[in-house]
Image (tube, rainbow, N blue to C red; front, side, top):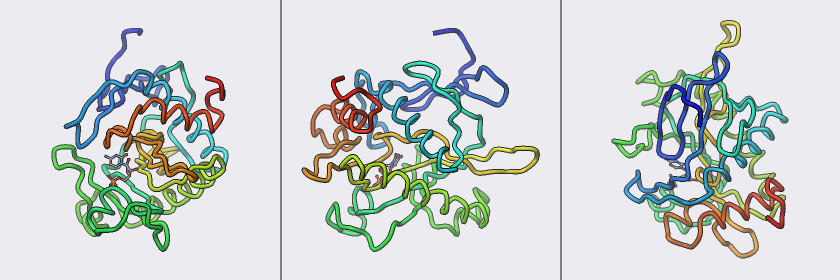
Length: 243
Ligand code: C5P
């Protein structure tokens, strides 16, 4: 790997200074973490799969007019992205109860929700990314009311796209998380989808069998994580079906 300036190292990705002004290189690691990094493992090939899958989803979003940070894939593990000012929120969209929602409300995992529900967590590992109401977000100045309205609209468009694409390959989109960033084009601020969209940040269940094809495989010790992600990539045509 060429020597270059490290900008930020997270649990699953590293950001380096980009090759063009206003850009960064996003490197996908093989590290899998869960429960705020209390559980950790290296999963061979996970970074390669997530780099390809995130490229696939971000390019699909761009095609339907949803702006994202993705510029182009550079190699097996890296993509060039636009530098953004990340809004410190995890934007979660849920179609079926699972994970923290199922636990909090005592709901059975997989229960359909009356409509897609968007919720926000404050991005802070030391606090365990706590769920926050919109009031907090506005009062603490993390985003304005207008930003929030725009973020919800963006998140629901991503949900429509992702749910449709996944349904087409026999997979139910239970929930997912996105991050949103601000960019300025000629002094005009825009909100764009940033970070990654991959089975690390979604819950994906096979429609027929209910098999989990996402990071819950790692969280819940359900088998080989790379196998599950490879299955998603093959169905989407991101990897050849005989790979
Ligand atoms: O854990 P919870 O049920 O709140 O997660 C909802 C969705 O957001 C899941 O798809 C999960 O993978 C994703 N998520 C994430 N990063 C986090 C928290 C949740 O990608 N830090």
